[in-house]
Image (cartoon, rainbow, N blue to C red):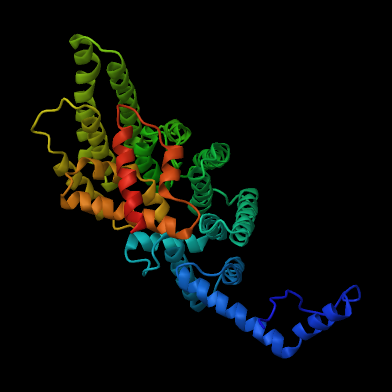
Length: 428
């Protein structure tokens, strides 16, 4: 006879049971039967871990991460600090990458240093990771707990005058990104408005309005904004930087103005396809502005850093992919190769959600020839992100992108064809 899988663990409250039921319950809580029950549960846990080895159990997550966030409130001693940094590094790789060694470059080490410097950034990162790790109630509850802790810590930092640090700003942007993934525009705007207020406060104190981290995020995200899916970018950041009248933000302002021209140009291209136009209209409103955009992109790229160069190359690719009447001398695969080299040179591995939603990577894959090494590189990186996100069991790339991205200039079918390809690869 199989042993019934009862859930009683004590004999409290048994007076209402029949004699046979009470006897069965008392038998269940004897030492031997209780040991068998523990063994069955352990076996189930082992089987669950084998089915999805990349996901720790909610109980372990709660125990490990609770200790992690609690320890971050007290300044660690040098030895403990090294241990804490290792814990942060391993958990970051587990939750946001593939579990491989991290960090592996000075850029990645700088990110880890920022993480360990601020509990709110650790808490917001854990909230993001667990919210999207699994739809299970246990995971979602732990994510809510971390989100509440992060919010409370940020409020404390702002109240004490310490809310203008790079790490606190990064914590708010992490929370914003988490809301963008689930298409919660209201919450995203709330977080962005909060971050903008901190930027304004930084400037009023004589600090740089934008941290290097935020400036790079905004420059990179201008390309996503062209397709209506900014993760971090908002024009309010640029307005705040412009108000400082500081030449330091000329690169950001330059790429923003360029992308605004590009967006307007793409709308004209859309209209010309919907309503046939005269050759004079096309020359004046499409061809001439197109060459102006390309010239401005190349000029801006010359003295720019790697992040700016990548965005400028993407502007070129968007133009070429949007307008089919191009000279035969244009080699899109060669331009995609340039983009690949620039992105690779940054020596920083973004999280899988950042890669999955990165329009720069998608544009490289769309531009390169089908069998080219460049396209293989782009699709491999994208499909890896799709696969990691799918393995969490909470989201899939197709639903995230389909809900958030908008298209102009007839590019929708190209992007969705690529997504279908990535969806298939993520299942292999």
